Structures are given as C-alpha cells and as structure tokens.
Picture 1 (cartoon, rainbow, N blue to C red):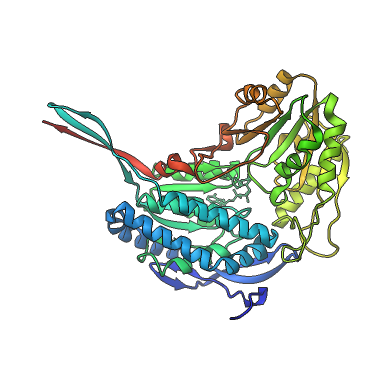
Picture 2: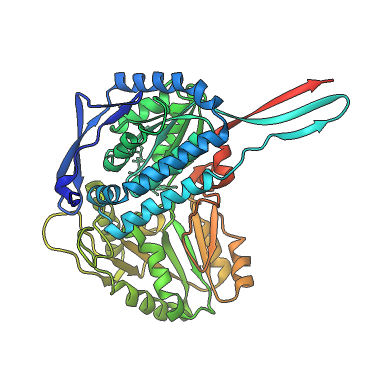
Length: 476
Ligand code: NAD
C-alpha cells in the first residue's frame, strides 16, 4: 500500500454523465500554508455545464422513480465510499484548505453524519381530508436538477450538506465547489460515479462565472448556495430569471452575551473556541463578544489563557491547532479589519505566534477597546481575530447584539439556564445557543435570520427544501 503524502495526490477531474473528464480550462489550487499552487484541476467550460445539465435532466425521471429506500441505500453506499477514502480526502482538505489534518478528518466525519441521518428519514404524504366526499393528499416531490454552489471553509461538509438531502429527496445534482478548494469535492464526484447512475451527481469545478451560469441556467430548478451575503444576493437575482427555488446559507456576525454570573475560568476555553475554531473561518463563529464591565478583565484573561495554547502552523505538522487563513483576499480583509480596529484605538491584548516565511499566516488576535462603528465590530471578519466589548446592562447588550442585518447565530453564557434562555429568546438569529457556540448537527435545522440567509439545511426541514408540495385532490 502506498503511503499517502501530498506528492501522491493526483488531480481529480470533472464528472459529467458518469464519465470523468478534463477541460480546456484549468484552476491552479494554492496550498495556503505556502501561498504556492500545489495542483491544477480542470475548470468546466459553459459547454460542459450544458452537457452536465442535459445529463442531470435525462437522469432525473429514473432517479425520482427509484423508491426512497433504494435511493437511501445508494446514498448510504456513498458514505461507505467516503469512509474508505477518508485518509485521502482529509489530506486533500488539509492541502487545499489549510486546516490541521485532525480537523479535516473531523469535517469528513461530520459529513458522514449527514449521510447517517438522511438515509434514515422518511418523507410522509400528509392526508388532509379523507371522507365520503373527497381524499386530499399533500405529497412531497423532488424538484429536478439542483445546483449546489459551495464555499472554501468546509469544502467537503458544505458540499455533502447539499448533495445528500437533495439526492435522497429524488433530485439530480450538480455541485460547483469554491475555486479556492475544488480538489476533495472533485474527488468525491469521481468516487461517487461507481455508485450512482450516470448524471445523478456531477461535480464541475470553476470560477465565479460558472456559479453565475449555474444560477441562471434554465435547466436547473433549484440553487442551494453557501457563501457571502453579497454573492447570495447575486445568486437570488440570477435565479429569479427562471424562478428557481433558492436556499441561501450566508455570512454572519454572531454576537455572544456573557451574563454577570459566569465563572470566567469555567467558560474561557469555550468562548475562545467559539470564535477561533477553523481559524475563525466559520459562518456561525462567535464574532462579537459582549461582556459585563464587572467581569471584563477576568473574561479577557480566561480567553487569553486558552489562546496562548494555540500553535498555528501547516496543517500536516504534528501538534498544530490552527492553520493559515485559506486565501489571500481573505487574509487581506482580516488584516484590514484588524489594522482599522487598532487605528480606531483598539488594543490587541493577545497576539499569537505565526510561522516565518510565505503562506497566508495571521496570528490569533484578541482585541478590546473598540465598539460599534468600527468595521471589525460591524462586519464579518471570517478569520482569527475577535473583538471583546463591554456592556452595562443586559437590555443594552441585546439591543447592540441585534443591531445588524446579519442573523445567523448568537449565544448567551450563564450558569442560570432560565435567565440565559430568557435572553436567548430576545436575540434575532436562526440559532441561539446557551453556553456553547456554534453547534451544527445533521438532526437540527440550521439557517440564518435577516440577511444571513433563506431556508435551512440539515434535519427533515432541510430535506423538504429539496421538494415541492403537490396536492392530489380526488372528488368521490
Ligand atoms: P463567496 O460568496 O465569494 O463564494 C461562494 C461561492 O459562490 C463560490 O463557489 C463562488 O465561486 C461562487 N460565486 C461567486 N460569485 C457568484 C455568482 N455571481 N453567482 C453564483 N455563484 C457565485 O464566498 P466567500 O466570501 O469566499 O465565503 C465566505 C462567506 O461564506 C462568509 O460570509 C461565510 O460566513 C459564508 N459561509 C456561510 C455558511 C452558512 O452555512 N451560512 C457556511 C460557510 C460559509
């Protein structure tokens, strides 16, 4: 057996109509720990997108007619394929995304929990009337061809979040991964061809223009998109031409409110990781922490104690807890927001170590002495920096937490669960967590309020977003 090393990775190809194929166009994929390309993969042309849509359209009638249990059995086999290739896929994720190998394996484990959950659900027909005069059934039917457009922070997980429920519901799917991280998802596409009929699942790498073409394509019935708020708006506009259904999982600027009865030492590590898991590149990471004045110094100290344990370095290096920022534009943005906060009078009270040399390195950074009006507080940094703010009373903290167009997640921290839950009820977000942040699982719906998104993923609610209601109304 060959040992897996970065040099053993061979470039995965596009998948169209059950075939693995190259292209006249290419994408160079950068290893963010070096800032240099490590592989080149094919990028789909507009003609290849048309071919894929035609194949997905042709595959749809037979796939939708396949009984749910049989579709679930095949999707379960996709899970087995992922398990059998976990080492290879995790290595690819670390190489292209930058995260430590253990976290890449964790990402794929979370993707497998999507498979476990959705292969066990049932899609019920609702009988709303059944008497001597009529029988009225509300059925759930698949939509057709689904376009799944994904992002670079969790390349495998965001793709599996979409393709697993979409396939189980009876749709055919075309996945377009982020141009920054196409490798592992292209490989999934190759591996899945051995299990699924041609055209049922295809993966096309490509740039933003391919995403736009997918969102506009008249042969596609639904777009499930994960990415930023501005791109989400463009996707919705593109989709409107053919009134496609959309699920939009967008950015956030999640607030956390620490109540005045917390024990700082008990929550310090959890507060830190709420903001800094995956190097802060988590849509529903804690991005603004509100702390009562009476607890401020103690909380800052407790978070710093955990921050000091973090070793930042290449994801394949032993002992590393955080990798680089995934791409250069994101690194520039994190730098700009951090420098802006410092210029506005903020204090970086913890700045971690980073490796010397090239790579998109940014130190773990904790900032205080800033408030609303500073872009680091008002906007989403999506990187390893977090502002910690003070508040005087809880009403004020709730108002400030809600004063944003984002509404993905939020959290409240207190040993008094009733008190914390009462505050949680007042926060405007798709998910509000108590004494944790974020928690995203296959069984619980996840989605954004306000401009953080439309619709949810995970759970039966997420599955039903890949269906349309059809009423059968029989007069007796
Ligand atoms: P982005 O919006 O720039 O890109 C995401 C995807 O959209 C890529 O595949 C890209 O090629 C494609 N794309 C770009 N322009 C397009 C267009 N006009 N039409 C169709 N597709 C297009 O995302 P980003 O800024 O690189 O990613 C970070 C953002 O993603 C953050 O805001 C983060 O919070 C968010 N995110 C949200 C979730 C969630 O579940 N809510 C999860 C992960 C990340």
